[in-house]
Length: 144
Figure 1 (cartoon, rainbow, N blue to C red):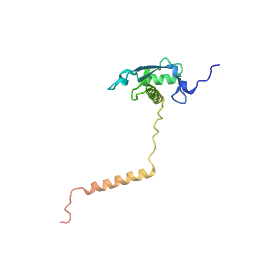
Figure 2: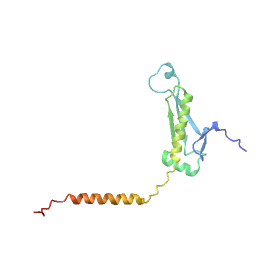
Figure 3: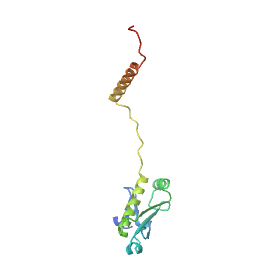
Figure 4: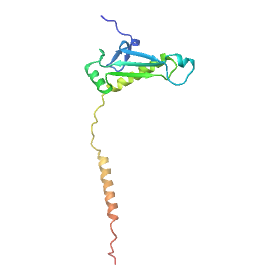
């Protein structure tokens, strides 16, 4: 029997999707932009990639939905912080939110009928407009 995974070794995307960190591929490079010795030498920019097409952790529906919305590979990068560790955390959070957003199912809109008050207000507004337009007619010279 396999040992249960610790929370540190997985990325919890949704209640139904937990990805082992072994399925994620990391790459590091120097952050762009100006900087001194630290920025020029340290590889603090973190990029994480997830292979949607080849992941054994995804169910068929999840895989189909992610492939349709995000493609076969999902990437997330972070270079804002000076620390590689913090950029790793940011990149993981971005990947998690992209996957969760793509898996979210929007509930279809159920059209509702107008309330009785809304119907009455609409008809009253139509009556007021009709009266206003009737008053705009040409001036008749009946009193003459």
